[in-house]
Image (cartoon, rainbow, N blue to C red; front, side, top):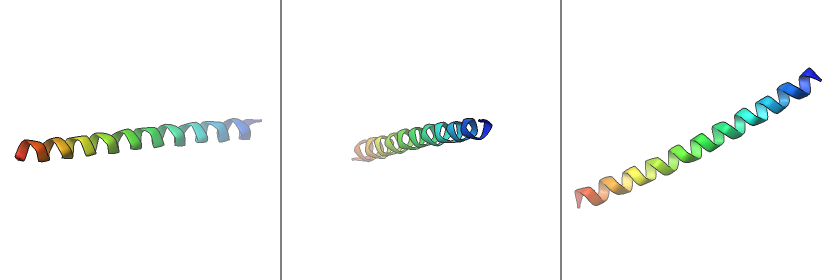
Length: 40
């Protein structure tokens, strides 16, 4: 039972990390685009 619980927690953490990573990448792209537009 404890093993199953740990597995669920790991999967939840991995999903959360994935979401944070995706969001961070989107923000980086927006920042890059804004910087390019500002320089033009």
